[in-house]
Image 1 (cartoon, rainbow, N blue to C red):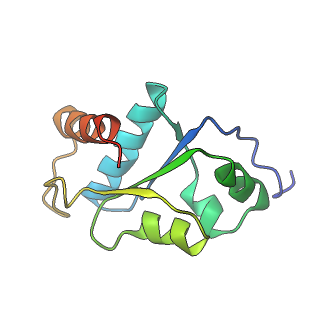
Image 2 (cartoon, helix red, strand yellow):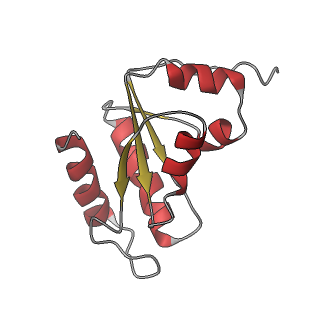
Length: 122
């Protein structure tokens, strides 16, 4: 398989969670999966952008909106996409009241974040 092909199609809105190793990273990932499952956006591969995989970069260029969900104030998801030249709508779980190392990852937390992201357009 060539690394120039991503096998992914642009859906208009792409969502990139940080998916970091902490509780808020897990929450960002689960929120993105929930939003994608509802059909409101397509979850996309942050690592592919960081690795400069041509097909993934091109698919991201075709997006109408790019959303990042950062688990903590380091904002790795946003910084990765901005480093690759993309303008993003950025959400940070810290700003939504979720603290790294202190966040319960459950359906209630997921619903709160999904609601905030899907109802708000920056």
